Picture 1: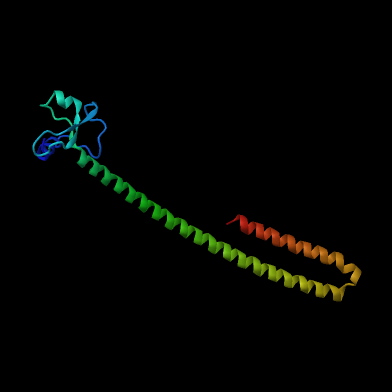
Picture 2: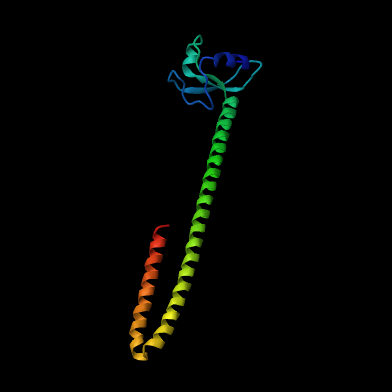
Length: 162
C-alpha cells in the first residue's frame, strides 16, 4: 500500500497517535507492506478490513502514528510546563505577600515592646518617688503583669488573624 492510498482511506475516520482499537470494535494488527514503493514498511490494519477489503477500515503507517503520538505528548508536556510556571508565579507572589505581612507584624511587635518597656520604666520611676520600697513592689508586679498580659493578648490576636 502506498502513502496515497492511506490518505484516501483516512478521509472517513481519522485516528491520531497509536491506535488500540478502531470504530468497528475489532483489534488492530501490524503488517509489513509488500508493495514496491513501501516494501516492508510497517502499518496498522483493522482485522476486519483484511476480510472485507471493500469497506473503509483503519489503515495507518506505524512511523506516522509514532510521530503523531510524540507530537501529542509534546503538546501535553508544554501545557504542563505552562501550568507549572503559572502555579510557581502564584505561589511566589503569595509567599512574598505573607512575608511582608509577617515583617510588618514583627515591626509592630517590636514597637509595642519598646513602648511597653518605656512605660514600665516610667512606672518604676513614678512609683519609687510616690511609694515607699515596701508598698511599690506588689503594685509594680501587678502593673508589669497587666502590661505583659495585654501585650500577649494583642500578639495572639495579630498572629491568629494572618
